[in-house]
Image (cartoon, rainbow over all chains, first blue to last red; front, side):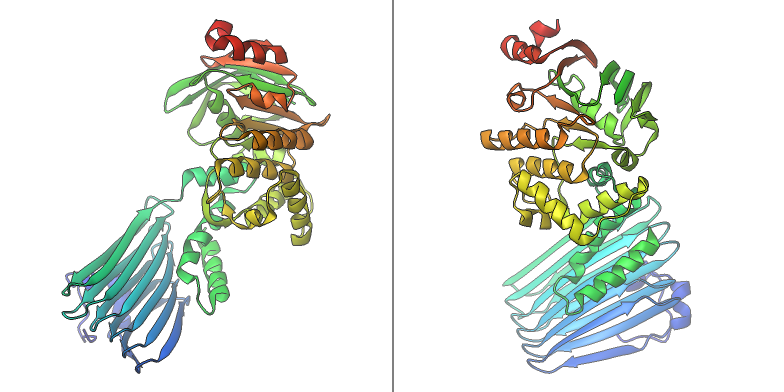
Length: 245
Length: 247
């Protein structure tokens, strides 16, 4: 699915919830190709915290036994879209840990397509979104298991937290399986902060904004557990969170 | 210290407290007993300011302030501690982090200097030791994976750290084995038995009162205090039941 010259429309599934007006000046988005040789291990962190609109388009190819770990902090000024397509060779491992935060009228989105093209590959995706105000946070994630890719092990854990009733989260984990011996799991939840927890923290003297921050910090932290630059990511996420609350 | 006058409160538009009055002075331990559905927990939550517990009449004065006008976190800073019957689990947030932030938020509202990390840990270690709770447990996420007894002991450790003027303890004794009951009882005494402090214990059973000697025992039924007496009233209730005593 190389970037087309024509701006996509909402009829295109991958752009269904996109902020097309914000995307238009960025279009076409250049594809960034990342190729991992057999057995190669690599990690990448995308910290999208700039002002304005940002769109990235990553195409990752993992050779046999290769391992690619991607961490994403998507906190744009206006619009942030990160698209990742990963094709996994035999026994390869793809790990994604992503957090996205949006307030005001912002749209943030993460669009992934992970293709298990050969046997015994593993994919792990943990995505945490926080939306406040009239913001929209999207995750569209497809896991495609091609014929013959037996022994596939794929997991998607997708959770979104809405801080206001006017905020929107679209979460669509998707599985397309063309092999028999496959283990694929996905969990998906959109919710609000636990009112019991907030009252419990407040009853100890924590002001409401601090109580929310603590709980959201923990929520987001799940995306960055085990990252090489975990501390820096958590700090950047915390700063974004404080700006949101 | 605490004056509750003709308090009326509703939950989901259903009146639960129907004119409850109670006076608690510094240095006193009061116990509220009563059958299920009498409004015991509602009283605790209403004093704590839990959303959904709507005061429809009456007043509560705490240390000279209108308690009902304060937000829950302001009530804590004013010196109120609410011990939960079912302490809430908060994944990913450690006791140490949340308690230090809570204590310092209280101190800030009172115009006091914040405690440093070192000072706080020293305090937490001391109070955990008092309640025989392993300090390592306070580094874990709030109440997650704790047994019922551990949760209640952790409540008492929090009370020790936050050092309130008035503790409202909602069924602190439920879910405790005999040893944990004694430890919690002794914890309440060591933290709260002081001339400038007071305790309001909400309980079903007399057994906690073997360790925490009350000055007054009240029977709550139908949203009101229907009888008040000394420690002997708790024994009478245990023997004859609520129906006979509250009638």
